[in-house]
Image: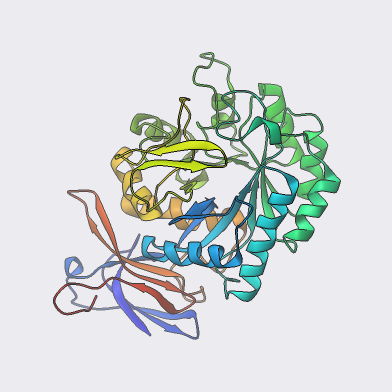
Amino acid sequence: MQLTGRICGTEGVSVITVDRGWIRRIVPLPGAIAEEWPWIAPGLIDIQVNGFAGHNLNVAEVTAEDVVAIAEAQFPTGVTRFCPTVTGGPEERMRRSLQAIARARREGHLEEHIPCIHLEGPYISPEEGPRGAHLREFIRPPDRDEFRRFQEAAEGLIGLVTLAPEVEGALPFIEWLVDQGIRVALGHTNATTAEIHAAIRAGASLSTHLGNGSHALLPRHPNYIWDQLAADELWASFIVDGHHLPPAVVKCFLRCKGVERSILTTDAVQFAGQPPGRYAVAGRTIEVSEDGRISLVGTPYLAGACLEMHRGVANLVRFSDLNLAQALTVASTNPARFLGLAEVGRVAPGQRADLVVLDWEEATGCLTIRQTIAGGKVVYERKIEGDGHV
């Protein structure tokens, strides 16, 4: 396979040779007019996906087929790898979710698409505001025996855990997880400055969807958002849909963390790609508005996101002073680095051919996906009306 286009972050037009799933060679195409060719970037990587296209990972009846469908539904958005996210709930339901993901990865040819599972809860703050849409009745302190059962159900795939460092037993639990090679994120927390610093010393390395899962009103300073922004040891993930964080906040947060420590995520739930309306989920009513906001009816709280990764990339450019190459770094290179995926996240010889071919209209801020390529295979191709070709 050969791809021709403008590699984001480089000059001119290049020809990329892919063989047996790997990038073998990149050579310039002399005399090519850059504007006539699409952009080529690393495949996008989403570290927090709860569901997509009507499929929910966090219900008792979830199946391996749901997980496969979620993976495939993200290909048109440029996502080649993602972390299925299991949220807090009854232990048995959580174990079923973990088992379904593990089975899908094992039997559904998703080994390269799912680097690890993200466990968000149940070890988070029970307080109104920080716990977000998580049900209080299922929030509990860290339990090593329970986590071992989770990891057994997941076949060892849990690689990222989001928790609140102030809950009882959290700090030794963080150390214990990190000793096993599991990454720990702070999120849905009401931690003090001292507790955040203690969690960092224990090995925490990420802030999950920073600025969300928090109180509606906070002291000017100090507060747990400022403390995490100022901690250079912490990466930070951001939901850039215009609802979770206003554009001005996105711009400020990115300037604090810099391109090097920022990660775009969607926190997508089953309503991503679904029409507006009200939906009943686990005894609660969720409303999807015309503008894509997902709300827990009767509260001021968001209940996940409808964001698609390629639209998040476009929003990064629109909301901040990042250029396209930097925004794509936040959506591909950075999550690969954070997860330790050395074989993806760059367009270079010797890298796995996880790639996205896209069009970018700078004047309108419109980004569209032409092709998504995973492991050297075209898993999505946009058809152009008239000739049927990309």
